[in-house]
Image (cartoon, rainbow, N blue to C red; front, side, top):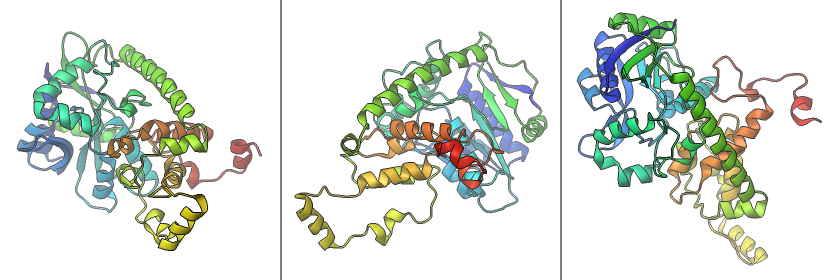
Length: 376
């Protein structure tokens, strides 16, 4: 199943663009969803590309991460169609797609997943104000810096919290993986990870190549560093949210915009309870509550909203950090949600997005489950 093929040297970005172009030219897929640098604005947004010539603007390794594309994969696949689509996804986006498939919100039948080791990303506010206008030259500079011996460095404090504590920045489920070579050869290869991926690469007529060098040792070091970051962050979050009073302080700047819910790739309910009459209180209720307490923070129900979300998505959280990325008041939501999800998933011995065959804990029931999980 696993085979390696050369697609270029030196420039990781140029090699990927050449591969995307050849992929579309073969006709093996009808469209490709990939982050594309937009004309005039320099924004990098997921774009569904059908013209091979447009792949010369693809910028999949940029530290721009405006949204988790699993939500877009859901739109492209939740209803059957005969056209085959390839998607370039970060590892956390792949995990989100896997969760959505289990939750009957996406389908992999005509989907080809392409991925790569993730080079991390900046929050939107950081990228848009400091790096967007630098263009693709900065992408190449950024890739070189992240592929150096100091891969896990925080790039001058710009890397998002979710990326600094990521559970796994390397592709799991994928059909094709684009691999950098950390040796002096600088050979960029693509690797088939499935029968579908192998078939596509065979049709493209690419030269065979040796596996990339130095990958395992570097990945081990990266995971060790991320693990240390994760422990420190979770400890800090636990101290900040140890009781309801502290949790209230943590969410004190929340304005109930619900951006975090909209940005979350696994928050898929068509109608959220917080958009129903349940939380559309009568004016007199607000006044009475204010008189009873002496004062009432407005908008109300902010903490209840976040607690509800933690319960709803804790088992499926993939740690992409888009909740924090979307927050207008920079509440560090990703650290809190990832720490809660970590405990919930360990409690059920479940890895979110880890395997398409592994049942979601809430979709099945075992005879001794209550005692095993709760000890009751």
